[in-house]
Image 1 (cartoon, rainbow, N blue to C red):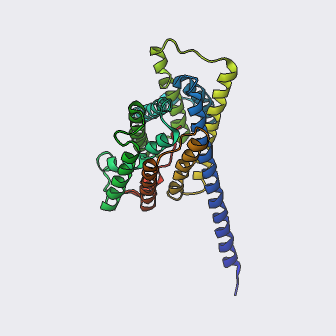
Image 2 (image 1 turned 90 degrees about the horizontal axis):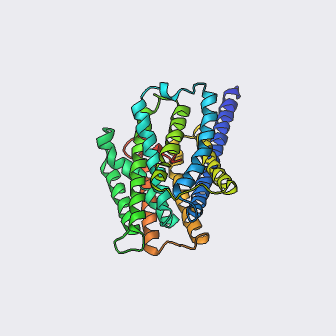
Length: 312
């Protein structure tokens, strides 16, 4: 009996396993870079205006977007279809970036990250109205569990600043809207065009606050170069995500997303000397459990499981 078909099948299975392993490794590397950049940004906003930090970030990301757009072969962003959806999606992410960076001025990193990670729960809560998707009782239970976790973190009478907490809540809601619009545009507009549109909008919108802050000035070039280098780290994380998605399905990677929450807790504790208290840790655990459950269950739809962080 010939063993050739069996050998071919085993070879393909081994190749698929290696590809999946490489994809997971790339994804975890991306999460590490995201966590490192968030810590870097937290450190930078202590001495620089959030808009200046975003300027460095999106200057680097804009350069990466330009390279991707050149490879795509069409630089005419204004000639692309679905301009209104593209604009809404890009502005939503620009609001996320503005609110997130501003909140980091006063918010501990771990708690800020945890509030941000309620985005998948908000997506599920919004999906019946915005996407017409059915959400089951188990999914609603997970959403409720996640929001109980958030209340444990931002509990009334706690030490978190009100303004920073509200900014992070706005950031999470706007990121959920961004993900919804990303799904609406999937298959309609090429990914490099979406990325470049987003980078340009974020570069402009995140610096609008400077118009109302005349005292804000650019730092000396060595410090500005450092901010741009930090932005390159964030942009590199995006490229690693793209490489990971080419190898592994988003639904497989989604549960691993909460590794970044653990990294944020470690960095907040060891770098900034701001460990979360017991109720906040319990809240983070509830958010992570709810998020992982939604990712494994599909969050009401198969695509919802695949909503991975692409914030910057």
